[in-house]
Image (cartoon, rainbow, N blue to C red; front, side, top):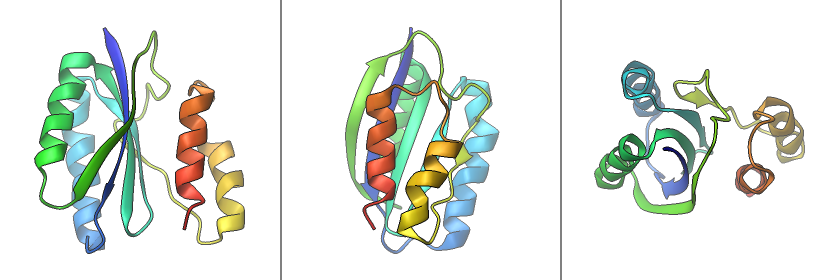
Length: 130
């Protein structure tokens, strides 16, 4: 059964190189695990959407929770899904525009249309917080 997880966490001292490393590791490992999704980082917090077989996503969430590079992992949403919203994204980094005013517009344009409206709203709300 396909499952989708949305979580936030805090990583206030994460260097840019470390973020690039996380993305490279995700791009390398996620396809073989059948995991897709997106990652937002605002310089302090992560918001990540993960999709895949429930056992694979749950296993990845366990590793994420134990990763010392961030803390306060909190699952905002977990649901079974009939199909993926991000089927072609091994782990898409969604850039957050500098201008808060342009963030909502940019996300509305870049986020997959297949996202559940409630999940889309959580992602957009995260992005416009800071």
